[in-house]
Amino acid sequence: MVTREQAIEAGAQWGHAEFHYTGRHDCARTVGPRGGVYMTVSTVRVSGRCKTWKTRPADFRLPVKYGLYESSAIEAHNAADFHLAEECPLSSRTTTAVESYGQDAADGAACRAMATALNSVKRS
Image 1: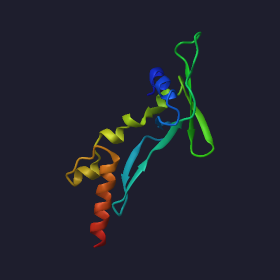
Image 2: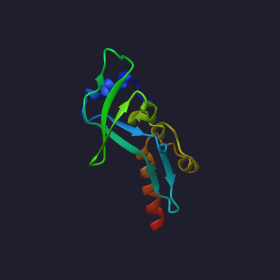
Image 3: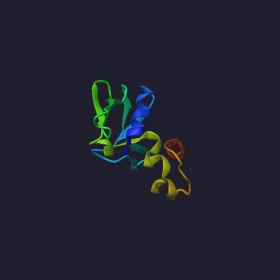
Image 4: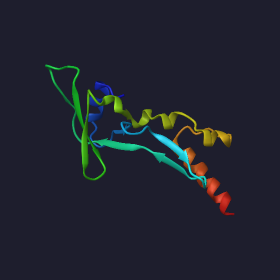
């Protein structure tokens, strides 16, 4: 969930802060039948400054952009559907596919490196 303070801080860094949208599906990592690792993450980036109101101190609006043409906003009523990219559960948990090989994946890069190594072993 995105808090008002996180939105204000992210609004000061246009284009640098990223959020993950989990309204339709959660962030997930799946291992395909050939050992490939697929990450299902909807990433949005900040496209403007966070707007706050003096008369409604709990409300905020942070404009975000998704893809080339789609844009939306993180507001108080939908803030539970977003989280910071740094706080993604994929980057802090290990997955069952990686655990089965006895390795710990602290982030997605380690999991991708493992999948690349597995693919090169299968090819030879």
